[in-house]
Length: 614
Image (cartoon, rainbow, N blue to C red):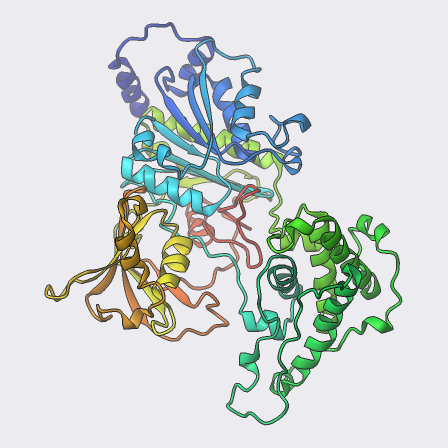
């Protein structure tokens, strides 16, 4: 074709090689019209997709490869990350992956480097990215994906983005000015729940698991002092008649109190006294079924030890009580030094036993179906199923799309999808591909549009805005934030945050810190038309404007307390994706589903993240 002839001519114009092509490179060049001898490739991620990807690159004939990964190998990785073995556990993924692929048949000129580190570190900044011809993402979390997307756009480097979940996955090229970037279709935030629902009137198992993991576990073992009952709902209509909720009973361990005695007091406080407090908040139960106490003295407790092996069946209420008491005793007795700073880990048997038992007892109080230990582990650990075959297919697509980019045939790039079930007119297509969409003109990352932020400016402080919105929600790494009046030049800009902390002395830091507890509507630069937050992150070479709109949002629909939209109205709730029958419908499906997460699932750091979901 004309495009291939053009690509051949571009290859002919290059400086001659000092070494002859290897057999692999010859075969690749014949099949793809792509020359690999000078291609410098950056692979970000060495997990499920990354293992398959680096193997493909080596066997295809790429010679200059750099891999970066932050993680170390865990036993749970061994079922699909095939470059790793049991004796590699706790070693850095990137280093072991490099060692493993060097054992494969490979060309003598292979130069593969491995870095154990965070892609957001300063040493991997824009200047580092500029040394590569192409970047291949094999990442498992949204925050890192956003960072790589932004740096690739800033340095004008092509990026091949990918993701899998179970049987489905996707691959696409991100080309500055030609295609949508990763953030043109914003990723839906992880599902969260109003704190009043979790504390006072849960109605789903996930509410009870969140209560046990985020509130009770942290209160007892993590050193966080929080009330397990939300008293703000005590008199929502201003009617203060009735007894109301009593003060929370103390849960600190008393001098001379044994671990068993303390465990039993926790049980009685949480499942008897706190339930009584809730029952006294009569307005909550006008239209809801009231909770019931779980009385420890009325239960015949079995031996808890054998129940650790029962994972597929939900424990009974007496079994849950026995396991909860036993897990508290074990942690207090055997892990005394960790009490006060312990955090939940789904692979910690004591922590998982406690959360499973406490969540199920909570469920029994509120007439909610009990869950098995396995189910609780999936929900509490945010486990997303990962399948080795899907990873292999997606890694193959990544290399094919990379070859198109490297030979300069950008029009041939496609959005590649791996489906669970056949699609197409004849229902005979498992791997459909469609043309890439143009950039979204409203995207605050690649189009530079002004974004809109809606929140209660009288409640949100500067510190909350910086941590919850700028850093967590928008994934800025080292932001410098100024509040600017673009209409009235007589109003001096107000700096709220400095991205380079090392550049500040103590007095300058104190000047900025004084604003952290100030509500946004009480700053010297008054909010209004023409007033915007200017955010500049030099580590990502990204600038954006955020216009603030003061409003009161429904807590049930916006538990975070704010709504962010990139220069356009907030998107509607995600609709279930349809199966693509042709290129057009596949593109429509992508617009609806790309970047969205399932209602009760979050993208997490220890599994292969998903961008296309079913």
